[in-house]
Amino acid sequence: MSRSPVIALGQQPCGFFPRRFLVAKVLTARRLQQELGGEIVFFYHDADHDPRETQTLIRFPGETEPRPLNFGFVNKTQRKYSPLSHKRIPSDWQENMVRQLGATLDQPTLEVFRSVAAETVADFCLAMYERLGMLAGIRVVRSSDPQLRTLACEIDDYFVDVIWQGETVRARQTAAGLQLHRGGSAFITLPACPYGAAQISPARDSRLRWMQSILPCTHYIAGAGEQAYLNPADAPDMTLVPRGDIDRPHEAYLEFPL
Image (cartoon, rainbow, N blue to C red):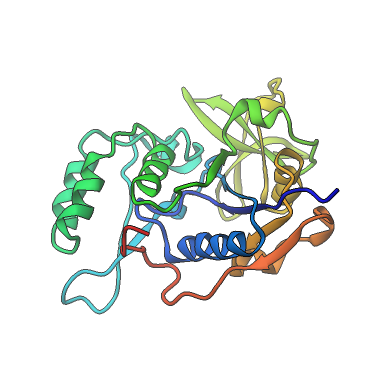
């Protein structure tokens, strides 16, 4: 008996308004669901730690290029090394951003932005995506979920959430031990410590196999970048589906409701 389709798409939090390529993934998944049935699952990789992932490119009146905006972070350690699920937002960031966005957003969209209450970057992005209608009817699975992590297969290429300088940081497991990348060829090697599956999140090249072991999907919507490195052998029972085209893919999508 064939199983019901499970159509997955994956993405890090990618801006307090979603980037257009994420919306293209969602629209591609919805079109596929109309053809095949089944459910759509959003693999929300909020265990990632790169603060550049949440940079939001928005066009302002009279400007020829989109303006890069991003969250504020409570300290440098969090900004550089904490998972997006642990990067806390300064209390004044939202209202300061409202004043900037007032020049380009319509009032209903601005009020949605103002209405979100979240302590972390990942929670804020997810709440925005949900309130803007992008995730209606879609099941969300978060890579930061400790219980979910314990269900995953073992991998040999991964990061570990550990405490360093009073903050949760995402350290890479290497032959030298747990390390934080300072930049270039410089690393910080952390003291050895015990850890378990609930603290482990995958690296780029192990993410597909790790995800597939948790939520076996029949189809995966692959973005342009993912198509270059995903290995179909990591999920032989899954069909990779290229996301649909969209113009200005890295800019913020502001045409709501979706």
